[in-house]
Image (cartoon, rainbow, N blue to C red; front, side):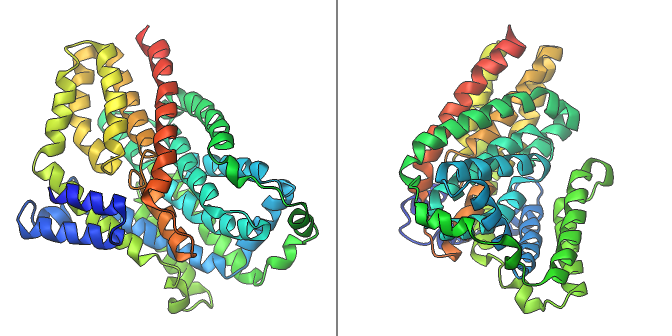
Amino acid sequence: MIFVVSYVLIATEKIHRTAAALGGAGLILMIHATDGKAAFFSESTGVDWNVIFLLLGMMVIVGVLKQTGVFEYLAIWAAKRARGKPFRLMVLLVVITAVASALLDNVTTVLLIAPVTFLVCERLMLPVAPFLIAEAMASNIAGTSTLVGDPPNIIIASRGGLSFNDFLIHLAPLIAILVVVFLGLCRWLFRAAFTYDPERAADVMALDEREAISDRRLLWQSLAVLGLVIAAFMLHPVLHYEPSVVALLGAGVLVATTRVTTEQAIREVEWPTLVFFMGLFVMVGALVETGVIGKVSHAAASMTEGRLGLATMVLLWGSAALSGIVDNIPYVATMSPIVADLAHTFGPAGKVLWWALALGADLGGNATAVGASANVVVLGLAARNGTRIGFWQFTKYGLIVTCVMVAVATPYLWLRYLI
């Protein structure tokens, strides 16, 4: 009940989403639906500190980068390549986001691309909300294609014994198709934002992006650290360092070795977003702890009646629906043992269930504003920069995108693995 009330408050925006999540978490702890040990120290039902500290470290790195003028440089470069035309600009930003999300986790990607989006939309006098929403969704879609692209994939790979190349071979072809379909949806969903202003475009084309760089020494220092951080992210299967550890080390090295003060470095940290995540993790963890999510998952599994095709479709669509309501990380952590049992029952052919779980959970994250970490981060960044993106403003697009993406994924799974 507390989760439902808190979710309604977040959805209706009667009070700030951080207050709703924090209040709900406090009440859940007060009635002993979970306890401090489970809420703060459990890997399966507690706050995911890896996500929190990954965000913190990357926010610090982005805050330092912002002082170099590199985001202004990229904004002018992108606007000039798009020749000031809004839809071309969205295509460019979505494709960059998609490629980056296949190599990095989607939260890191939106943290890097959002500052560029704010600046380029300001230059061209375009509404920034449609571009940010499209980027968040693109990061969730493209992140599905690799083991490191979305945190749930790491859990799935560990439980299912899957490699980095397995994800590339089985999911990347579909994701390439989905990104193209998504660009077509963007042309329709956000058509009101594509107002071309020839005078603004001409002004931008006359700018020299190189003049935007204000501190070249700090830029090279920051890019060197960011490059090492990204390399460590990509080498996670070899190095076995958690992304949060890498991000914090990078942030620490950057602050320690440059002229940037600690106060300047942490100025860009989105503290309300971090606290919102903590509250949300505690509430969802309580649902896992009390067996609510487990019962729903088992009920879905029992509906399959030993039929692989039915099991695959129930898992795909059920995961998409549930991941729009609760964060997909604890959902996948709860479902993984169930899927492992089902996959073992069906033998080698049961491997398709892992792809159904990955697609459902990752693509379903687009359904609502709180369905995926990238969505929450984008909403927080928008609010910090004076642009309010409401829960339903995001969700009305997200539901359409999720239904279309999962609908396209359905025949792909059926034709490739079930026939």
